[in-house]
Length: 88
Image (tube, rainbow, N blue to C red; front, side):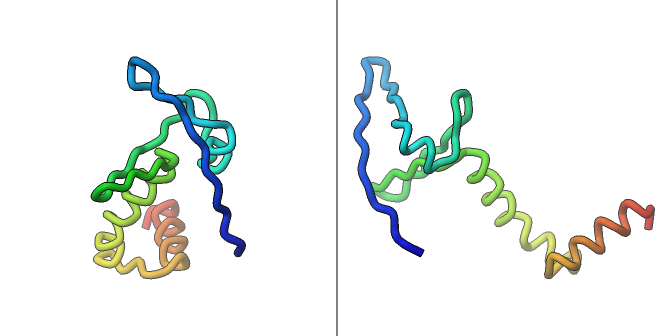
């Protein structure tokens, strides 16, 4: 995969607001009215798609629960869902 590197600048308004440049919104996969999350690690700040980030956090938090339930693979999950729908 080819690394994509570019920079964009945004002006901070007197209310502390910025407009996320179009190229950045495209990379993030966000549209008007959608949210971004600022992830701060030490002195670095990353801007990420809020919905995608929330899903990754949920998946990370649920991995131990999935293992406890014996769900180790996608096939295990599909079987679990089928069984639940069948009332077993």
